[in-house]
Amino acid sequence: MDDYIGYEALTQAAMRGVVREALKQVASNSTPPGDHHFYITFRSRAPGVKMAEQLIERFPEEMTIVVQHQFWDLEVHEGFFEIILKFNGVPQHLSIPFAAMTRFVDPAVNFGVSFEKQATDDDTELILPPQTPASEGDEADVASSTDATIVSLDHFRRK
Image (cartoon, rainbow, N blue to C red; front, top):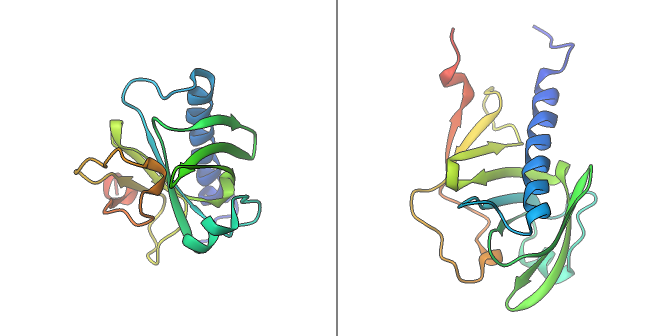
């Protein structure tokens, strides 16, 4: 059956709005509330992504950043956000369009969403964070691959 309404695109846009609002709360307080912190994965070469060339070379496909303790100047706009993070002790400015995001996870509350369809026919997918805590060293240097568990929303739908 053809989806003339475009529910998948509407769902993706709504979930990007959830991420935008969560980041706005962090930006207004200059820190995430409570134990909240975010793992944001994005395509490093997507249109509109702005970051240092050495970071693009280091993360040519995807990059995951952590918004928790050490970040500065978080600004949230309608279609993108800007943040300064340290990489190897050097502050770097990143500008990331929401459309470039592929995953968003808040391990504090077991919330996550994937923005790219997998090879299956599943709809929007939740990503549950790994059960082992991340080290708090240089948070921005989190590897781009996580051991997250992907759970399809189809498993929870009534048939």
